[in-house]
Image 1 (spheres, rainbow over the protein chains, first blue to last red):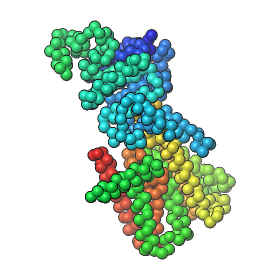
Image 2: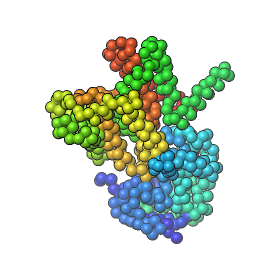
Image 3: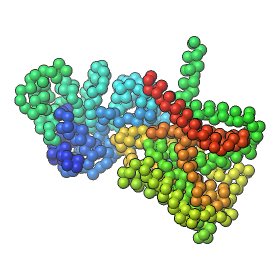
Image 4: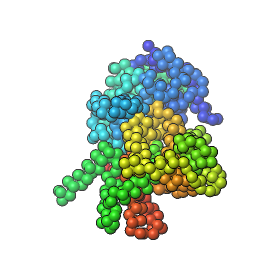
Length: 258
Length: 330
């Protein structure tokens, strides 16, 4: 069953056309790799899905519902989560504040005044979420800026998963991680698929993409240029579609060694 | 050696729990206590109840402005127009009550509304015209001061009705009215900033605007509300000042924005946003109040007082940066 359906998405910034009519579908529980050279429009495309950018034309449907007019907060409530490359964490705030940012559980202060944050509940649920991810953080009340890169990644992932998303978009989640941390992120993606959560994985690390995805979409010059079933393709083909044809065995071999 | 690390650990733990539970920096509290102790030794009059109330009374105007500064700076913004807007609202309130002859309550409300209006304009310009907050509020500093002089024709407006004077000079249960209004405002502002959704989002947009935006927080709307709130608080400060000195003075609040911002920074507000608490700011404001009061009691020339305040500001930011560097190296 189709979860997300994009048709003819166009986006330009002033005179610069970034997306020239992108078509993309994601099935429920499917892991789709999105690859392409720098400037191919990957990040722009993802931001039009989350609502940070408004597409100039085209349609975006989630579960058959048109979500184009919705703002990022509303799309998030419908189950679209994104983990940004820069993690988009508020570094001076603690773990729970980051996980619940924009969606804090509230209670009435002194039983009278609404709009106050239920910090105890937030801390408990945040701790449970970190636990579920099998991660270890030094302290849940510490500001996340004092954590290591992998630990911050954990917080960003926990934030994306806390509200039962249908689709998680990950922008280069493994780029800045140590080897062991990369494996745990890839394991996590597999686990999400088992739970029926769809994932769009943006990555330059083609080995990671080939090992964890069901399908690979190649973005080139602002179009979805190729749609490859991961089981039926190989490094050589992916690399050649990214750069646009020709014999790329040397480049592919280089990536393979990666 | 072992005891020294234990002590260091104790200090660090106290620091942390202070920040986490009370939202204040331990250093500023220590400075306030030490400063008060020194003043108490130097002047026997310092610790008397009437002098304590004097300090609070003198701090009430600056304190309200410092609350505004904490919210705006905590959100990654800046409001340089606080002092001028305060002067404008003092004049507007006095003008409405004295020259237009409207009821006192209308005069008091006019103070706050005039401030809120100036703040609203600030917020609109910052979020819709994309002019940096520094420039917008610097412009408003000139605009509001000039408008105050135009409305009052450059003269102090005297002769406020009794109810308005009561707000500034009344003493129910022996406590000055401005102190009561100031303390209530501070308590509400503290609870909202530290524990409400609005307060947490305020610090979040100051911490990382992109993270807040990605989390679905309507950043521009928040900023417009914050600048309007800042203006309204400046209006409240103008009201307190006007009522206390029993006149609408167009030069009221000259340079007060700098003192207010200093109080907020000393109290632990991050100059670049993301961190701040009203409790801390109140300690900052009291440090300034105690410093000024003590130096007055010791009959130190006011020129030296200005120097002392400047030095305290630089010292506070130095300590803050030193702490941050130490933490980031760990």
